[in-house]
Image 1 (cartoon, rainbow, N blue to C red):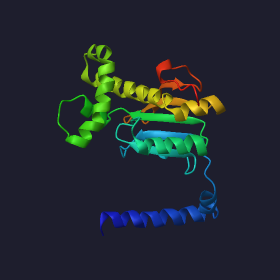
Image 2: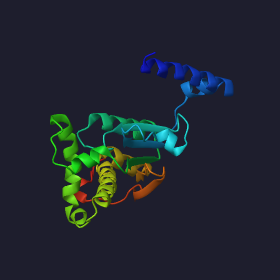
Image 3: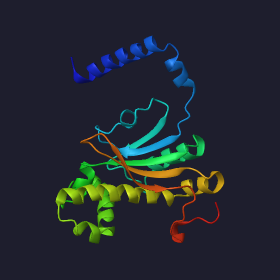
Image 4: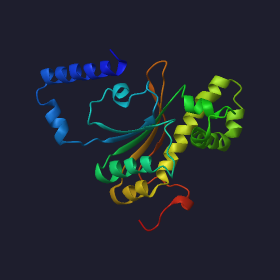
Amino acid sequence: MHSYEKLLLENKAWAREKVEDDAGYFDRLAHIQTPEFLWIGCSDSRVPANEITNTQPGEIFVHRNIANLVIHTDVNLLSVLEYAVTHLKVKHVIVCGHYGCGGVKAAMSNHDFKQVLNMWIRNIKDVYHTHKPELTAIQDENQRFDRLVELNVMEQVMHLAKTSIIQRAWKHDQRPDLHGWVYGLKDGIIKPVFEMRANTNIDPLYEYDDL
């Protein structure tokens, strides 16, 4: 049996178990989706949003990419954000990174990861550059790595606040709140590191005045 065939078998077993426990489970999921949360997380397979928050399908709308980045030219991310905020009307947007992130670790090196990954990782290098005095003052490399993970999450939350999508929702609906979290692979605990309530003031340069 091929490994992918095992996934299909496990899916059938899971679906059968769900129906045995609750006959209307899939019917409810098929007809409603009202999540309160948009989760912007890392693609790392060890950080599944539903499992680490003990939530059910339908409770969290999820977008994942390498190192949980919010890039102003990323149409994929922005389309998810637009749909979640404007149409699903989520109340919270969470950027969740994790300690031991390979993308962040790569950004701390000078290795050539080839063009596409180099372009992506450059965004994390920019975070490092912005906070270079603080990071270079940290002598222990592992502690510096952990701090860059936290700072990266904080910067991505700020990037969210700079979008017209978030600012429009703040102006008209006083939502969503923005949260920056970091998940610990070693203990399974999520650490909140940053928060922006709806209508938090940001640099006027990035504020839209005609939303």
